[in-house]
Length: 249
Length: 233
Image 1: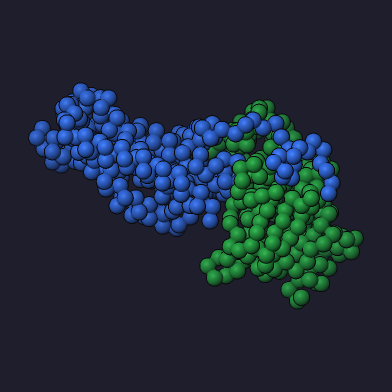
Image 2: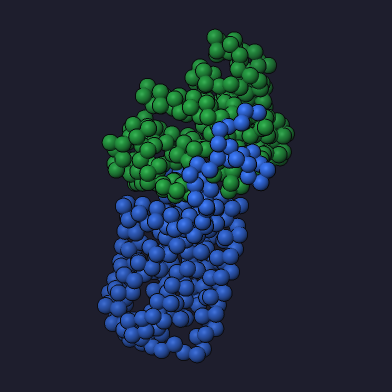
C-alpha cells in the first residue's frame, strides 16, 4: 500500500485526511439547508407565489360568494382557514424535494456528510417558515373580509397555527421525499398526506375557530391541544427515524 | 491497504440484476478506470460506492466501513451525471454551500480558491443557470474536489468538456494520484481514462469481466480490452 502524505488513522480505519474540516454539527447542517432552501425559493418564488395566490383567491371568493354573518364565520372560520392552509401547504411541500431534482442535487446532498435526518429537519423548517408566511397573509385577508378580530388573541392563535403548520410540514416533508421520484408526485402527495393529517387538522380547526374571532381559550379545548402536540411529536420522531430508508433506496 | 472492498455484490432493479456477483479490490492511491458499455452497471456500482444506493446482496466496504458512514462520506468526492449544482444559486454560493455541508473551516475562502483553480473567478457571482455546459462541468469538478477527498468517484467526467476543462480535470486527477488519493473513473472515453489509470476493470452486463493493472497494450489499442473480454467473452 502506498501511504499518502498527511495520512492519519481514525478508529483503525483507512486514514482519512482532515481536509481543513470542522467538527460536524447536526444543527449547523440543518441551518445550512434552511438557508439554501429559503434563498432558492425567494429567488424563484415558484411555490410561494402559487400558494399565496391560492390562499387569497379562495378566501376572497368564499367571502363574496357566501357573505357569511358573524355567527357563520364563528362556525366556519376555523374550517375555512385550515382548508385553505392545507391546500396552499401542499403547493409548497410538493416543491420541497422536487427542487433537488434538476441536476441531481439530491445526490450531491446525500453524498455529503449531511445526515438524512438533518436534511429532513432543514427542509421541514424551511417549509414551516414559508407556510407560516403564507398563513399570516391568509389570516390578514380573513380579518379584513370576514370582519374577524383575529389579533385579539394573537399569541395563542399563533401558537395553534404554528402547531398545526408543523403537523403539516412534518408529515408533508417526509412524503415529499417519498414521492419525489414519482411521475405523478403532484397527485400522490396530497393523496398520501391528507388522510394522515385528519386528526391534526381536526384539532387545529377546533382550536383556531374561536381564537381567530378573538374569543378566549376555553378549558375544553385542552384535549385538542394535547392531540395536536402529540401528533407533532410522534410524526416528527417517525419522520426522523424513517427518512434514511426513504432517501437511500 | 484497500480503500474499496466488494464481496459478491448484487444489485436488483425489480427482478433485473443490474450487478451480478461483483468482487473487487481497489488499493489506496490507485486510479481505476471502470469501463463498460451502456447498461453494464458502471453508474449503479459508483452509486453504491458513494452510498447513494444500497447493495441488494453482498458486502461493500469503502474506507474501512459502510459508505453510508458520515466519516466515509466526508472523505469521498462524487461527480455524477447530474453535476449536483443549484441553478438558482451563484457559483460561489454553490461551492460555499457544499463547503459548509462538508464542515470546511473556511468555506468561502476555499470556494474562491477552487473557482480560481477552475478558471471561474470572473463569474463567481453569476447564477449557474446562465452557465454553459462546460462551465457547469468545471464548477461541478470544483465541487467534487472542494473538500480534498480521499476517494474520488467520477462518472463520465469527460463528457461535454471543452479542451480547457479536460486539461483542468486531467491536471487535478494527476495531482490527486501524486498525492496518493484513490480515484475511480467510469467512462466511455477509454483513451482519456487509460492515460490516467493504474488499474482497469471491465463490466459486461453487470458482471466483472476483467480487473487488473493497465498495460501498455491497452494504451496502444484501447479497443483491445473490449475485444478480449467484452460481449463475445
